Image (tube, rainbow, N blue to C red):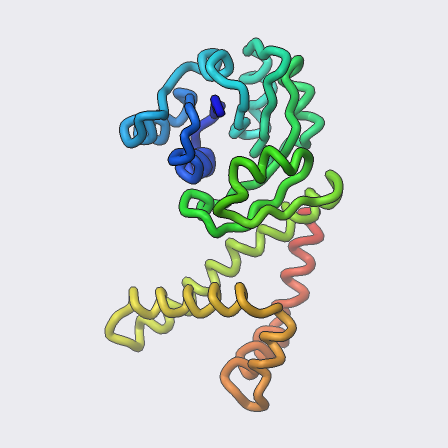
Length: 240
């Protein structure tokens, strides 16, 4: 495909790196020059252009702007009929993105995570499942949602990633004060959580780790008593 990327921040760069070996011609915008120049230097099939140059060179567009600047940036560009766009803009609905790029059409919204650069990451999306699967489905798991309401709920729930990373990081700091190799300790905890949650459903894993008086049960009960569950649900509800 001829793919253009408007807005080349960290997430857009990861998305490009995840598909750059698939034979696409990719044009990235000058925005976030560090990322765009790094991509162009590393891959022969990536080049840099201004935003209108990105549009002119592409049949499929990735809209990777902050939602609050999207109207100004996209409103200054001329799109053409037949172009389609996949939007990464969490703060703008698929319908809002579509209205900004007529006569082109925004047909799917997805929220990539940094791991998409290497593959093996979940991709939640709404809209045209086929184009997202064609681009990213070979290396990642695609999770289509039914409508914009479900997409909003998924967007809120995915925010658990940062607090989980914070919790693992804090546990790694605690462990690092007690062992000789702090980096090995963090690597162990990251793999421990990732491998077990990938293989086993949450409630099944909790039950398996629920030995009376065991380390896992004692820490979980302590954190629940401290309000972990309610704090999490209240935080999610405030974002929904």
